[in-house]
Image 1 (cartoon, rainbow, N blue to C red):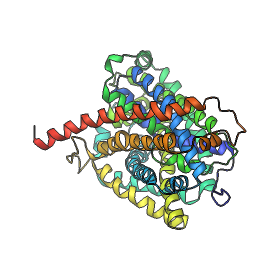
Image 2: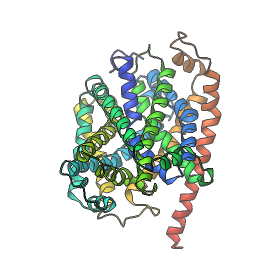
Image 3: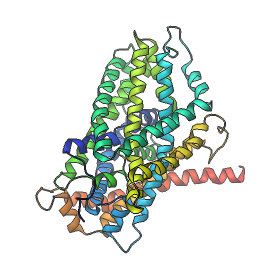
Length: 460
């Protein structure tokens, strides 16, 4: 399987920036804080970190192995490694997952565009206090602006992907990630300076396990998969772009640690400020659009800091969306021999269409419910709690039970050049621990939602 004819990342730094950009994005800045707020704070954080290390890292490494060994897109890699089987269906599910996630990511990113304009016009940072929850509700319930910004975001994502791996994905990851990290750290420092912020730190770092239930565990697992971009074909696709001399285990572990640190900084940036302002942590998907404007409202030069924050949020969304679109683009490009430009246009069309429904689910389609959830939340549930766990399950079952142990070790050690004392532990995790953990949590979560669906149908 020759790598010479495939795109590759140009350097180890390029690999790290691209993979970290995929992992440390909207999932950390937007999604993680509101899930943490809804599920009790510190206890959820501990479970999340455990899932990241014990499940996320081995699964990411598994995807890197499949991609680099298979030397193809998410479908082709499975076909190259297991030619006469149906394992490629795991890759097909990965493409579907990426489309679903990208559709509601584009909705959230669209909000950030409008809020950057609100900030520039000093609408949400006026000296006179305003109801930020009402501003957010009024904006998201409209049609034209949310849809317009959603389409703009999908277009920007497609533009970067159209440039290719080195000139598009790698280049812009190197530029955007340092900007985002600097902004995050500054916001965290500012949040800690507010009177009453220590209550927020208590919420984060004093775990209350009485608040943990099956839903919280399922959410933590889904967020770990979400945050590390595993289970949806991204890391298999990126793995196929990694050169043979790169250290895959080191890359996977580095990304996990940086992602955990980044998510924690995001939480520190928001919860001390939230408690300082006397606001509830259970704000849901609109958390950063309600809390942060209230913070900036009380700062000198608040409109400037608000513009900077929402610009950072757009960057985070973009770095997350780019690899999701690349999963489909690489597949169309290689399987159907399309040009990258044509494959990008076609691939971007699908999440844009789905995005119309997720975006309007806060407005004209707000009363459309799927098992009691609006379209946006149902898409989130489908991706995080069904498709991602199934994707993870397929990946670890394939690598742990149906692929050659010797070939796995060769890829981990770079043909024997690197030490791999952890290999037995890695194999044990992907064969036994991860499949059992993912299956149990997945079935429990599905069962809960299934009962809800049954009651809905029966009208009970």
